[in-house]
Amino acid sequence: GEDVEQSLFLSVREGDSSVINCTYTDSSSTYLYWYKQEPGAGLQLLTYIFSNMDMKQDQRLTVLLNKKDKHLSLRIADTQTGDSAIYFCAEIPFSGGYQKVTFGTGTKLQVIP
Amino acid sequence: NAGVTQTPKFQVLKTGQSMTLQCAQDMNHNSMYWYRQDPGMGLRLIYYSASEGTTDKGEVPNGYNVSRLNKREFSLRLESAAPSQTSVYFCASLQVVGEQYFGPGTRLTVT
Image 1 (tube, one colour):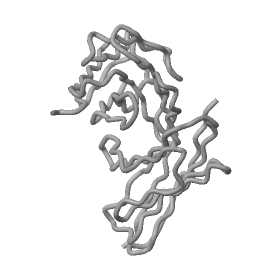
Image 2: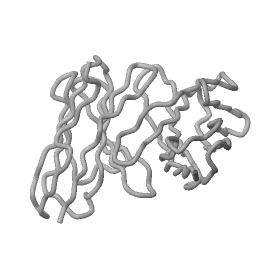
Image 3: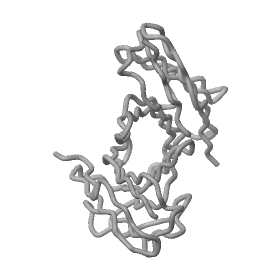
């Protein structure tokens, strides 16, 4: 079965880097996603990575994947107050048909000015 | 291209009342989902629809029913609302492989 885990809370100072971690358990080929949810809003897709990749970089965001440990991380460089939000990782096994999405519980990022 | 839309945005019900949450997507996606979000519990899947005409239970289906009216629309019905169904409800749709798009959510309070 699939189980996606995250720590619940992270606090960083403005300008520092933030690293949000996630572990997943599915052993098949899978897509792994990071979503951002601001207060009172829906989920916004930030980035995603396929399990045959080790890293993906997009401006201030870097996703690292350790397939051996089934560990996914999202690094936000030069964290800003606007980055304060809840960040969810999600896993979608690639089965060629219907994709069952499993979300982590979310990590609340607090950016201190 | 509106993406995924949900109505209503807010709703207050009394215990025992019924209501239907509406969801529509204009991206021609096959798969559609209903989630509920509660503090500290992330998103939990209520029901999903892999394609038009099919629906399946997710993690927490009790107390809910769904209808995939056509490819665009996927509705969630509460037949007899209970306080435990107070939550934020999100609808989402997904391409065959790729991004999952979310609606803005419906905040439901059951008193």
